Length: 141
Image 1 (cartoon, one colour):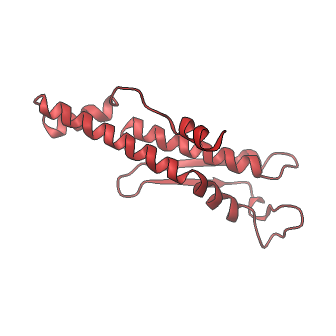
Image 2: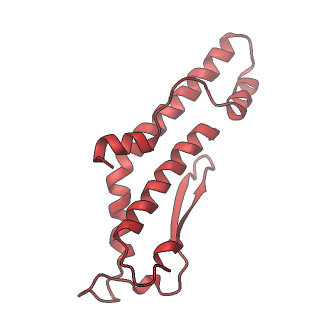
C-alpha cells in the first residue's frame, strides 16, 4: 500500500473509532478512551484491527442489557457497516490513482519496479477526497 492508500484506511479506522466512542456508555470514560485500531497494510492480508484493552470492556452494555450481550459485539459491525461502502469507494479510487501514476511513469521510460518504488515514496499528485469528506457528505457528520 502506498502512503496515500494507508492514509485512506487510517481515516476510515478513525471514523470507526469515533462512531464506537460516541455510542459507548460512560461512567468514568476510561473504557471509552481505550478504543484503538491497528492497520495491517500487508498485501493480501490488509486489515483494520479494532480493540479495547480495558479489562472490563467485554462486559460493557447499555442499561437494561446484560454482560452476556456485550455492546462491542454489535457496535463494531454496525460501525463497519455504515462506512464500509465509502471506504471501498475511496480505497479503490486511491489504488486507481496510484496505478495511473505508475503507468504514466512507465510511459516516460521508467521500469515498472522503479515506477512502483516512486509511487510508494511519493503519492500521486492531484486533489484527493478524504474518507472524512466522503463520510460527511453521506452521513452529515
